[in-house]
Image 1 (cartoon, rainbow, N blue to C red):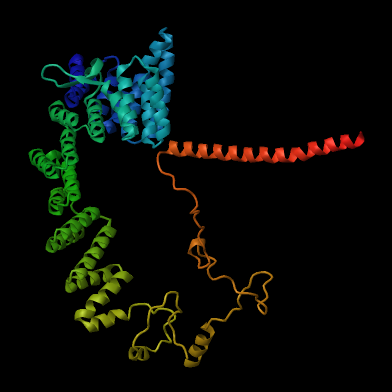
Image 2 (cartoon, rainbow, N blue to C red):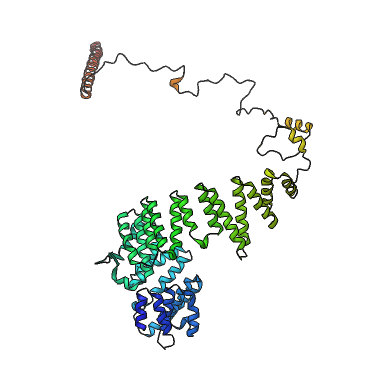
Length: 545
């Protein structure tokens, strides 16, 4: 029987496995409480763990395996701090126990590998994202021999990162998933299908589909979601993923269709599916379909949030009568409900009265406002009642108007005088309401006149002797001024035509000729200058002789 219960546990048939474990409680089987607690946690019955342990008269710290499983039950019950302390105790007990058995350090680390993974998961649940990412990354880098713990750490790290670094996350998950053989299209690598629970395997496939959608790999996503219903027939996640693929392909109508068919086929699982259908329909602009989906969930039908959503959807669809019937049904349900939450009914009645007044149903709105005034004495309800009663019953409106507290500062207002005037114009940040004498108003008008300020002159400027006036064209560009004269073009320059090289050659020849001419002139002038010098020398010599 013990072996049968373990086989059923691996097959995911938790209820059948637990039945056998509970039958074996009276028999003195070693470590039976460890498997029993693990089965309760996996089956979603973590709240029963404490009672079972008390019935078996065992403590959570009697072994590190039992401490670990009990900590998992505390996580399911949202007792994260208690679970963290128990996991630390489990690691300490495990190290002491395994060292007494003379196991190697690597074997001890492999045996206790699930504990650091669960500690990192607690950090994730507590919202300590960075600490959880660092812990999971460190576990993956150590490349533990425990394949199941490594796979769980990888999947949790991918879920923490979300759409960030999609390529790296896909590569990590692709190492865990491989194409199957035979009837199974996909399977987990390294025998993880036998080591992980059904819930853990489903989480890995779900994250891969979401990453494929984020990376726009629609063919692979479509291929994977097509086989998930057969792999996890008892779960609603595959149908939700199929709807997500259709929405990603802009086929919202098809998504609404398959979700509606599934909710009719499996009414016991229809709550989440109908909520998803309402969300898809509302986003696609189909308010009537969204309202129809919400109206099929009876347990949330009369909650204020659901009522507000239904009324908004029916109003968008133009079904005002349907919206009013939603309000009426909710008010009647809360009136008959044996509940202490009377404030919820008060909120719904208040909103129903405002909705009916908005859509011209003044008599119905007046009844609701009157009910609120009698039950709660709300000022808002009293104001609403006066507004609605003024359209049909003036005497009632005046009677309720006397219950309003007078506003401060309005005692001296002459109402008859205000009615004879043409009305006051709205002035932002103007004075408060009150009577003002004519003489006072005239004095205030004079006081409001702006004073003439003396102009400020530049430093050193004498207004008596201002000097010549500045040039009025000083801010214009030079070429736009009247005094601007463009530079004259040199008409004497020869018009040179031809290639650029020829121009350069002719210019060099002209320069060479001009240089020769200047050198010739210089030589002749020097010769003329040297002749008198020679003659003067000869004359001097002759004179000496």
